[in-house]
Image 1 (cartoon, rainbow, N blue to C red):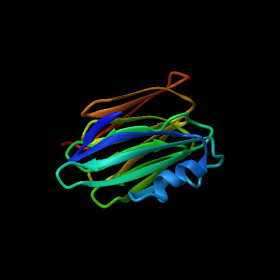
Image 2: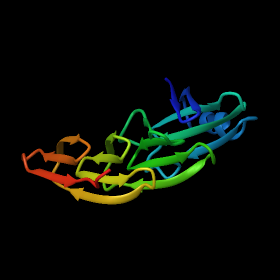
Image 3: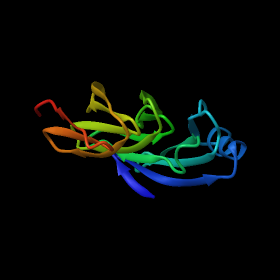
Length: 176
């Protein structure tokens, strides 16, 4: 995995055998590091990425501890920001790459399934609903619950959530 988030490049650091190896790679190296997910209910898989900013030489690492819900984290960059969205466990971490810190954390009711982003909103979909935040301030605009989520679609005007019982919920988005 190699992609750009603002002026930063996200480079795969790989998967690790256990917490000790991850901790050594992220927190006990010559490169600065940030470790996410230490509050996971059960330590199941361990991942890391290295962040690099060309021309400045800035590098740091982000380690992620995942629990039973996912085998890999979800990554998404937010248009025109230096915020890297990392979805894992029962939440979404909004990492400010320019500050090498978590800017905000969105906690979900159940395990994260998908993330959608259109530059105006970020939609975090979990098994029993969705949480929607406005970009770039990341202020919550909706928290919708339903029976098991079957599908979610995102347009510039609305989010459409359909449950397994075929109940449809439409969430109007703020005008851009």
